[in-house]
Length: 229
Image: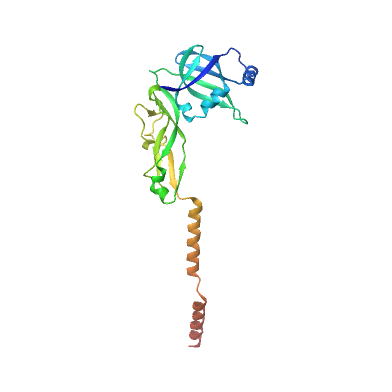
């Protein structure tokens, strides 16, 4: 159930000053809660955590947190970063129990874009959602959800209700409700190409409407003949 492991230590110091001192020594403060147990203040090695965070799956996997000689099963529920350096400043872990459902956000992976008629016709895909909230037992937690867009033509879109979920997994909200059945991706002709075609069409129409020099001379001669008659 777990492909990731991190080591943690318990901490007793709290407050902003204590957190700054921890970070200066290469540690990241955090907290572990849930599973009907009391919250525990912890610290983790910043370098170890940073390496784990490089893998997208770390955020949607059951993680083994080795804490005080005990291997605790948990998931990442929140991650705070410094606004300038983007370094992790705090992490929250939620303990999980095999019998209790959890609600998590998992990434969406779009597949078969090159096979889509809309893409072959020159269209471009717009991904309107990058992840979605799902509910399942810990053992059924998917690393990601595939969104198959092979059938999309120009102007088409795909919604959450059209995504095939793995067994034992459901959305955290009712996608049969139109207000919650969000659009996930669309395929459209690039706007600059649309405008270029419209402008080209306008130029052709305008050119067709402007009479040639020969036509203008003929009309003038016909007008003079009519006046003489």
